[in-house]
Length: 500
View 1 (cartoon, rainbow, N blue to C red):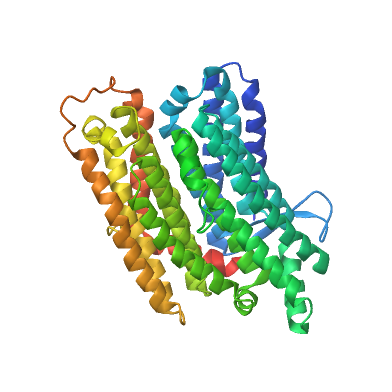
View 2: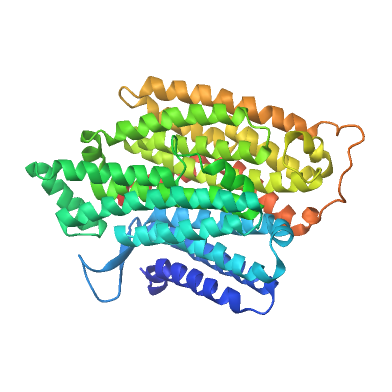
């Protein structure tokens, strides 16, 4: 393995963090905007190279930070799955910022746009660090960085509604962070480890001896519930609709596509690299995640149907899609974990595309986000209308799109489960129908004729080449995930084999 390959995880985090620090120092706002995207493209290229190398040699590796070994040191870990996630998250970040550029210029005061780029790059750094970290406490640190910067990014729009939404977001996020920290503290007290491999060995030894069973169960419950709150999993999703409908387009796209997925990656590490599937199954944690996911994908979909505001509907849809991941992780087998990983990728590309399209539709309509205000907006902004349409149909389960492939993988994984098989298949079928119930009427609205006498603002600059490139790339990625399922699943399965 080459020196460059071995150092890519550290370089990815370092370059992202360094560029975030530089952003406020640049004299012109466009310079910061260009800098963050250039760095993200560099990390994207390095991640692709790392994924190809690790798939070729079929290995993973750990990278020790500093000179202190376990149990006090800090480590990064990279395998095919981590490289795939870093690749996809980097691409989603670039496309979300590019597609939401016009709204950033409109919604955020010029002298604060450099600081907004700082926030976005810190968010990106936190997500990449969560992908690569091999240390629980380091994961917690970047959970906090992601939470604080996401809350500030929501309020960056500077409206009364966004301020209230950000405060609610912060309260829920702080509660989730506290639960995660309590769980980590309990584990550290009874094992003396924070690195994941030594933790897994220590937990397996304690379970074999029958020691500390109640504290171990309590730590698992605390961390799973904490990550549930932070990822807006039912029934802890109350903060999500206001937060996503209040922020600017790029904030909503990145929060939905990346930040929530970072928490899911940490949950995956808890399942495979800390506790182990067998231990969590004996604690009934898999059953807990499965039930939360099943209820969430149904109840939040019903809530989405009732929304008259398009951004709130898309936000409730995000909560439903996160529930698919919990359902998959709760199946308690490797097939379910692989399906959950594919759902992470599918939602990471689909939901930001919908938010980017929605932002342009709102600008092309009457400037407001109610369905009656964007009637016919797809005719004035066709590419944005296509993005919303394809994204909605993908989540409904149209074949050859990412959402259908994810549902298929979930259904396939459910067949090999025990008692979860029929509830999972029932939930997938009903939730797909519910997705169609709230997305298809919305698609018809945006392509319908505008109401008589409607006054529209001048055509926005969303038709610039940046917005077009962003939407086209999102569309290509969605079709790629939907049609190249075997290739993506091969990388995921290989990564999971080396991950555990």
